Image (cartoon, rainbow, N blue to C red; front, side):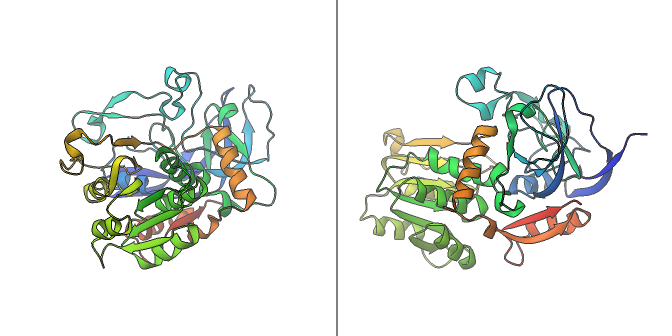
Length: 366
């Protein structure tokens, strides 16, 4: 009988449960990681709700921090027992997309959505953990193409300090990078959840000198100040579009970053954008978007709309770990709650319903 492990699996919309699964076998290019800390992402909540289809029985999660339990025979430069992370996106860098400069789209193809009873197709991009293969909310995870994806954790950094690197930090920083930010720019970031907070931090690091953070939660807006926001606006207390246009003297912002994934936030990001400005979209959308005609200047405004899937691979992870190790940003503060893997259902309930000031939940399997 194969050795078994505990794993959080998708059962049906509304149900993710703890189950027993065999510990994966290791192929030549793989690495088996013993998970020490993982977390729950907003995308996992979309899966829980049935808004993003995955196969029944799939282990969920895509943010691994752990130690190497076993290495494939072809993987060199690492050793068993070493502390590592791997990106949520695990490219092999052999595809046309990767060689064309888009490694996050490595292996991207369209698959039928019928596996959840829906019609049509979904683009998988290069996201495999908790999407196409078993993910990280388990005692162990198998990392494919390990040579390209494992990144050693610098000595002295805790799991909580690096837990944002595999997805949240990479995604938020990519949102800032996609916003074409220049020194002296004014940038608005809509939604100050974990990804939006990382986008705020990334905008400051790229040289924006006026960063406007928007959210409906004053506690999150206070955290945004610590991440680099210069102005905070609570959309429940003011008309943020009007306020931002006043703050910019009617010019609009150089860039806006949408970090929630709703029509309302996307439309607001369009309405505050200067002619020639860039909207950087990070949201995972669960319904069709409509572009407002006036904000889009009937298509004549020289606007740019960039979307992003978080970059992966060991070089991206190395750079993010460098940022954390340098002390230029402290993302450990985003970990507000800790749960054992045995209590994963309670952790999902807390996170999905955004209770008790939760930002990110650290899940400890062992």
